[in-house]
Length: 488
Image 1 (cartoon, rainbow, N blue to C red):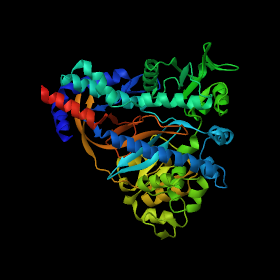
Image 2 (cartoon, one colour):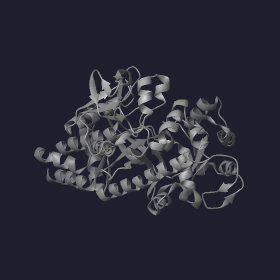
Image 3 (cartoon, rainbow, N blue to C red):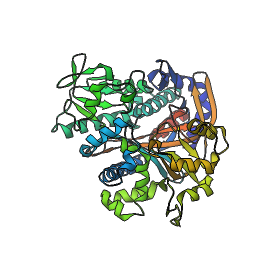
Image 4 (cartoon, rainbow, N blue to C red):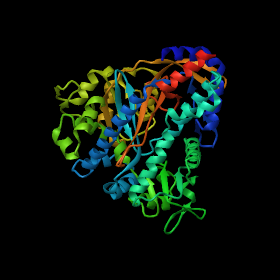
């Protein structure tokens, strides 16, 4: 659809500011601690994929998410459990030890990819795998604004938006299916979206709440300090049957909420159904490394009960990833190496180090970025100095904080030229673009999940820490927009 992209590049100066303004008004924003908000930029140049490819990536993610949960369960039941438990906070560890054996389903997970010749999975998110709302805001607003600029018939616009799919709708259906699985087929009468006050993504939670209400739910955004109830999950006297969790467990250590802590510690939920229940070890990067390792360790794959489809998904999409420790192992080319750390020290451009249990890209170190301001800033924040690559590797290999580090073979990506929209205008930037696909675990069927694309000038892509959202649209929708332009 290069022809449409060329048209959009020429026309973006006319519709770009409205696209940015409308997306911000709908909730495409980051909320600061003081309650103020700043817009998340959106691009005038979308990512365009066939609907079949979007579905294929969702299926791939379903296999990877399921496999990751299985590996987590197997490791926690083995003598290796400290590999995962050791990096958790005290409360995360307590809740994991109390509840994980009872965890049967995750309504939503997200697998983050870079795409070279094919999608290459970087990690699995299972705690609060967000951006279902952000992705819908970006795509829906893009389609509306561009279609109107192209004079697309207003009465036909809703059909085009619907044809593009909705992650908010998929999330809603996953939550309903998860509730029905825990409550003998019944449907919830009320739904609470639980998050912190002034959560960084609270505008997204409010958008999801509005959408859930449009779908017919009696839904509200609620906060930990509001919740009480002897027998039910209640806020200001109103009972909620289903709770969608957008709250890191570790936040309860920063701002204690004993009622919520106790609620999180009962799985399956008695006072209400909680989705997702605490699942910190699923997201720990060491789990992902052990999933990668299972390809060359049949006993590990067998212990986890990985299916042929799951193993093929790992083989197809997961780059070589290992716990980063001194000692022998199998390198990315299948060769035996005497010391894994020495291998990584010798080939910095080939590898990236990631703290096992962290978020926001704060402890991610690309070997090839040594000497850059971004690398030095991260290293100094973590260690107080700016080490060489060899020094950093040695520290990472012996650093127990957050469960230590994993090492991953770098996925090569080529920056793409995109038009970033803000209310003040449109800017052409070279962006690293990722692709994230959603999936459910433990449901009878997968809802119609889509994906979300983020762009950043840095190779370490993170929305809250900077960057923008790229609308993801199907080839069918792109063709309709192009035909509307040609008809003017």
